[in-house]
Image (cartoon, rainbow over all chains, first blue to last red):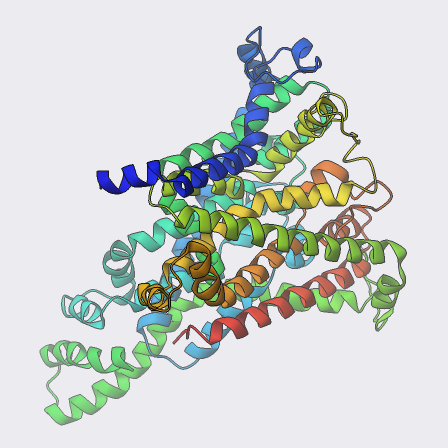
Length: 281
Length: 324
């Protein structure tokens, strides 16, 4: 191990590899760094040209306080947490039993149902927005939390992912659970899901990241500032401030981006798996 | 099938405890009765998902097609079929032409840019043993950061006077621009943001592809005298990555076609439609101008592009994986 790492450290290609990767990483990180840098600078320094990351006068407290008080940013964050949590819970509640039926039960129409899941997987959600908007209007739920949540209560990707995972669990496990007197629904919750924790984590990350970051549907579904999730909220904040008050605006952007970035850095492998699972669908 | 066979003894066990009928009649009754119970159970488990898939995916998509063929407007109580009039209007519209061509151009910049950078970075990461997770994390970060917020950070970077980009260019004595307000630069700049956001995603997919290359192939290449890194890359790695590259290209193209957040936050399609893209047109026509028929026709065109790309992707995947 130490021999291997010392040879890579000494060799010229190894050094070049680090140099190039550090340079590309630095370029990729510039928007983040610049955002954080502006969020701790006073207006005078923001509008004076210069490259320094760290301000002469630390203005972070003022900017972050302004971001938290002038816009209902805590409210936006809370809305994001509420909406993402409800969506992911409802998705698991709806998708897991269906995935179990597709993976472990034999019934007429199973192939058709799975085909429908695969077709739904292709449909881009933006195409469905207009009819869903009309549906929300007819149900009288536009401009409520329900409007933000209802299009996503069933996830074709969730059904697909859980089905693939459940298929890897041996039939003997299901059989044994039946002999123990469990009904099928109990098998889903008490036997299959506890064994499918990796799939649940991957799916939950995929779902939460997508919905925390989503702008398109919230823009259509809610008008009320008190209901806005973080992306819509920060856009509203930017438009109100007319982009002139950069410090608090960048502080707000940092606060919106921070939860996922921190979670990602803490559990990188899980995030990469969850976020790229969608590509292999 | 398996589940049906396996569950018969269980059912018999319960039967036997309560039934006084002769055993073989019980078996026959149990098998038939259980089939029905099985089917009912399966549908009760899959039913909620089926109903919601119908209500939230299939009926809406059919509705989009229907609305695209009518003159229906929000709030109107009646509608009449107008055939392909909406599509004719869309295809005759200069604004839609601009939007369509911009989207294609954007995709044509984002896909090669993302593929080259993603592949290059993946190859570099894989060529050494140290700091792999570290580099992967840093490059992947933009893909899961909230794009709406990061677009606002990009706006600050691209600010004509105090932005880092123009300050740097001016520092080197290079010409500067008002990147997001100049119709010649706005689309390429949005494409750069698109590449920035997706390159980590492509990198991760390429890393998975590289992991799947069997060591034997490199050993065989060694025997054939391909010992230099570049030789191995040319003779083994890149040819094998061919299908992966096709796959990643389509995945990235799908992402690029679905670009909306940066347009909405940074340019609103301007200046002079120079950065208008399909999803933004769809949003504006449907929900701001309330031209539902036109908006739905755009949605159908968009859907056709996405489905076509996905079918190509499925074709590629079919050679490697089967979902049964």
